[in-house]
Image 1: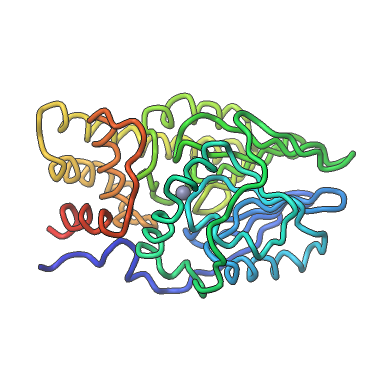
Image 2: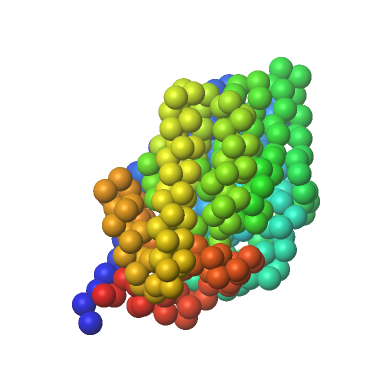
Length: 321
Ligand SMILES: [Zn+2]
């Protein structure tokens, strides 16, 4: 059988990481389509946003950040439960790890399987995987929003749940005073979407509406470059919505006429490839994305758990043709 290499398993080229200063005490590390991370300074502490895949990978990020601030990381915010976003947590030595209620639930339910699945799909991101001490557990969780005062002149950092989206428990981090938004994987700028654990209808409607309503002037998505300026921010949100809407349309049409999952994959691939096909992880994500949209049309509300075995099964069915 000739087929594409599984997921991102053949993607072994190092990406260049760039630390960008977005405002007063606000930093983002972008990496040419690899997962982004951020940091926000308070008067005498730092809030870290996302933790990368391993403590060794996170330490590289902290080393770069330390050229700008030596304040201790008091809070580590997990935007959602995915392994490549959380398993580096121990490197931050944070006093408090914060996440959404549903993120704790998902880590309990499927954290171990997700770790194995993501390691198989994207081995390059797991720099020295043996440095991971175990699953990452939040100390504090919330259901709607949580505000961290950064200090008198800095204003607040608002952690906001915007509805079901990329997962059941995504958190965005909003700095009203500087109009900067860290959107996690709810928005991707010039990178393909991973939606294997998503709620496509909610995400493409109310959830993205709430993200857009922040009125951010700079937006850091889960992958891809920083969107600078309202126009670019809105474009990133709408590009994300467009990807979701095309999937819903294409998969929905095949599902309604009693077609097969493979036909739904072909139709979606054909529709998305011209605009998104050259973007990072497009081929990697699409089989898992289409399977999840299909499940939603089958009435499966709560996403099925991905395991290395199920990953291969779906991949072999859709990409090895
Ligand atoms: Zn994710």
